[in-house]
Amino acid sequence: MSDLSNPKDTNLNSGDLASALEKAGMVANHYARQNVFSDYLMRRSQNTRNRQRAALRVFCDFLASIGVTMDADRLQQEPASWNGITFGLVEAFKRWMLAEGYAIGTVNARLSTLRTYSKLAHKAGVIPQDEYLKIKDVAGFTRQEGQHVDEQRDTTRVTDESGRPNKKKTPVRLRPAQVAALKDQPQDSPQGRRDRLLMSLLLDHGLRCGEVAALEVSAIDLEDGMLTFFRPKVNKVQTHQLSQDTWEAAALYLEQDGMVQGSLLRRSVKGGRLVDSGMSERAITLRVRTLGEAVGIEGLSAHDCRHYWATDAARSGTDPFALQEAGGWNSLAMPRRYVENAEIANASLKQTTKRRSDS
Image (cartoon, rainbow, N blue to C red; front, side, top):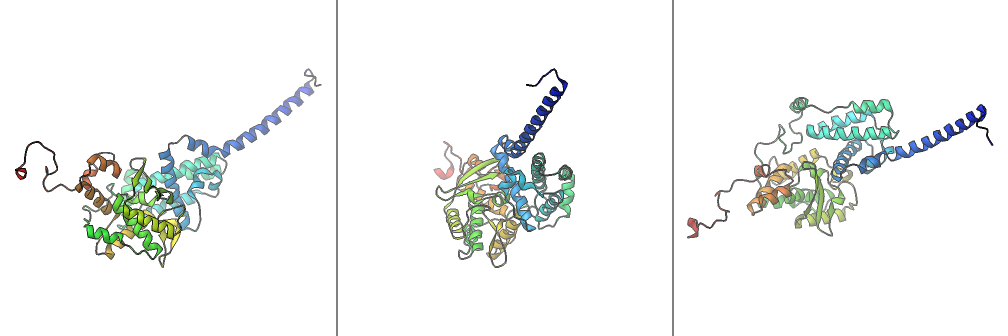
């Protein structure tokens, strides 16, 4: 038995305790690093997780463009997947987003997500300190800087309904026959089946370009006939009942092209073949324009399709509050931009006083 009054025995016991504590600390650190991502995600709302995953998915599209295959799920859940991510890649991602035409606010938000997960990966011991500090310094753009960037960008860049400089002052107004022609894409090729689904989603559901670009295969439930997707502008997950045209287009596309997981709308290459990476907002914008020109419509955009959807719903008697909810607007002021004034302002009012035509 050790004699605690003996200094030598005391030192030995202290040394053993220190060694045991050191080993326990190393084990604890190991498990703490492994759980950094899961602990972080546990504290975040589903909407936040969806929004960040959408940003990571776009980062994966960028990586695919330089020949690197990465999965957004792994980036969000596995610290080890960040091994090899450098500040140079993050800087290149920023330049790529600008070239692809993403709005400045979108670029800033996605860079913020990358900085957040880089910090977690650093905490998990995957990204070295010096590399993390460089990634941390990859800044977005101030409002004034964003205006300067927009002034210098190609005028064919992606535009959306949030008031960007190149947005059209008036939308292209579509007739029912044109809408039918836009959805009547070839069914005998992967690209045609994808385009059929793309136009149905835009024209029958009024999705924004970015919302369509972020869709994954899992968003569509053919059995229940539902579409579930995330709306960043209102920070919520929403479910739409599929229109008949959208359901048929989705069934054809998913079954014949073997879509099981990943991006719903895949990028096409020469010959109409589809690849694994998803369509960017810019790619969707250019494709919608091309499909419009094919049926005699110049300058068609995804926003024009959304305008048609909202206008058609209003003309059919949709309650403004229901339209606001379905369109993903924060207030009634926004849907009014997309609803044309009725020729007779009080035509749809319910009143007890007879009007002249009622006599």
